[in-house]
Length: 303
Ligand SMILES: Cc1ncc(C[n+]2csc(CCOP(=O)(O)OP(=O)(O)O)c2C)c(N)n1
Ligand code: SF4
Image (cartoon, rainbow, N blue to C red; front, top):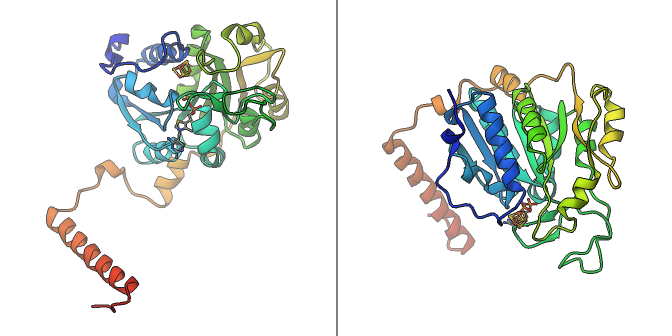
């Protein structure tokens, strides 16, 4: 039996006291326990930012890498280690800004992973600059006359490109968020959940601003109508919907299945490491080639 304590990490938490990121962490733990997933069955992947620190606070496999680059790393993990449940944890700056290229192209591959974006409409870690989702006109410490460009519509983009599961949750509604995480993690294919996560230190909207506007999609909402889902996903302002916006009945083939069947044999982790001698020989060849290159550049001729 899996319990919440199994995920207890010893890492000191660096988030501001009261940050809604704690709600997302709680919902994540709840979902993993509800699904009876053991920590060794999970691999969390993140980039850089406050959101990207979440994997430090759960005791399980994780890879915390470069800013914006969580998705390609997670895609590779899902291909070579399909036995793992791979979950990307990222922020709106990390995923929609620096990693925007990967965000778009990952939809075209449909890897079997869950993508959770803490969307606080700001760069929290670097102290409150505008992010791709900051509303037009909002003033920040850097954009002190107000943001002049229009915000990205990440959910509509995902639906347009047939991401097979697209949802939005709210960090202040842990019960609903847990349900969304359970559905996303269970989903076979790319499951994307944008989570509204007010930044209480640098954000331009208060928690109550969001609470007053957020509502759950009604029971009779149909998530299979692609263009109606895109329209719903752009609703923002006086009312902000949460729930599963889009779910494909027949998602495209998983990238990992295609990749393993056509161009790759077995998991990387199952490959034999080369011997120390073979590595030393390879390094020797590299050093010689490098020396030759330097000599070329200095005009002294090739040895
Ligand atoms: C290549 C690179 N560019 C810029 C930065 C600086 N940087 C670190 S985190 C961050 C933004 C993080 O914003 P977000 O993903 O929204 O996360 P939050 O901190 O708000 O949770 C930036 C610009 C960096 N670390 N690396
Ligand atoms: S800066 Fe904002 S997002 Fe980061 S921990 Fe503090 S409240 Fe949370």
